[in-house]
Amino acid sequence: MKALSTRQKILWGLVGLLVLLYTLWPLFSILMTSFKAPSDLFTGRLLPTKFVGDNYAMIFTGGARDLFLPALRNSIGISLISTAIAVVLATFCAYAIARLDFPGKRLILNCALGVSMFPVISIVTPLFNLWRQIGLYDTWPGLIIPYLSLTLPISIYTLAAYFQQIPWELEQAAQVDGATNWQAFRKVIVPLAAPGVFTTAIIAFFIAWNDFVYGISLTSTEAARPVPAALAFFTGASQFEDPTGAISAAAVVVTIPIIIIVVLFQRQIVSGLTQGAVKG
Image 1 (cartoon, rainbow, N blue to C red):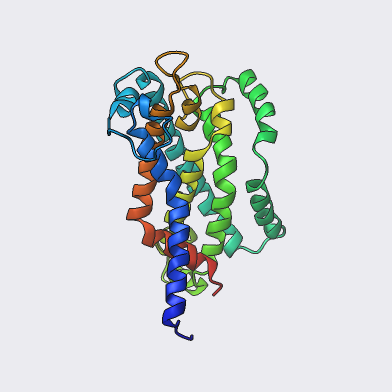
Image 2 (cartoon, rainbow, N blue to C red):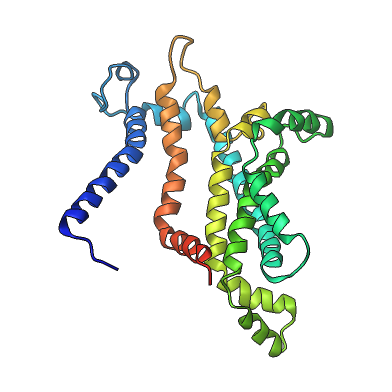
């Protein structure tokens, strides 16, 4: 591979810097807004005149506490449960697609990919009516089940590509040594596939964590409403006050876990994505 010249390195560095600024500018703007006093919100300045923590106090101890904290608990619980179920089911399904030869497995994989691209808004109304009839409306299961339609297809597709990279001979060797199919899968295949499973879990968690359409349509109280939907119900101290600062503070708080996960596990994420994308 030909080495880049100094001019090309500078050019690519500038391109990367522009992409980084374009990506981080909205986040930085929201962060600065979260520290602004109400009098600074509409001055047009990026930086606040004085950094204040009133907006964070509002969502943790103030008037927005009863709306934000239950929503944060709901988002964490529902997203983790949805991710765990999706990863377990996708692991078995992807293993079968990668290892077994049966009619229609390509169709199953294509359908999984097609479902992941299906517009969510088109099935919200039927789900709303069905959930109200069977008692799942405004409940955790009422969101976990629809979230599987978002997380499971992409999990199956990602893990199927990853399982195909694991040499079949390793599993055969374990079976020759006396391991059953289940033991070979559990003690050989799953440990080798850990980076792919971990990457899939992170992607599934992001999808569930960021959902808005299901959260706003299938809930009506703080019993199950997640944070993205709860932000739409933030109000100011009066009908004439815009809760921009409180919404920005809440957005920063719910973004922090995502940033921490990406920073701490970026190597595993990149490893899982690249190894699953290379055909062996």
